[in-house]
Image 1 (cartoon, rainbow, N blue to C red):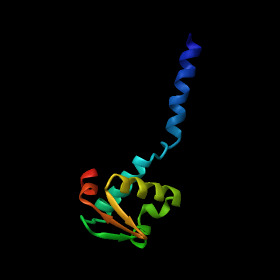
Image 2 (image 1 turned 135 degrees about the vertical axis):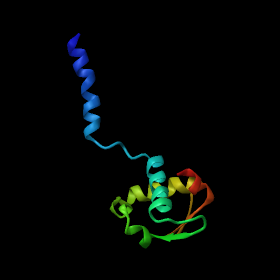
Image 3 (image 1 turned 30 degrees about the horizontal axis):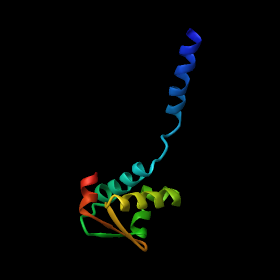
Image 4 (image 1 turned 30 degrees about the vertical axis):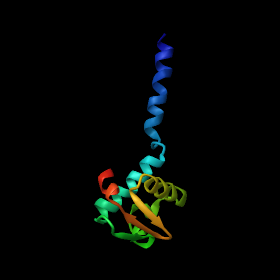
Length: 95
């Protein structure tokens, strides 16, 4: 019986070593948090990709950034057009 307990404890320790999987929801929320809190943008303000490159988002891989933009847009938090993101009222309420 002690062997089963030891085996059950191993996955919990292993997950602590690895970062959580980045879900579209987590990525989208983090993007909006950075825009609202770190960049101090307000409703209706436009943010270019160059403005974002100076934050930690600049370290994201492009697929993660695209997923974050897509999710945030699907929730109505951002309007994404070309290389410009526009913060919406829903986006400020999401964070």
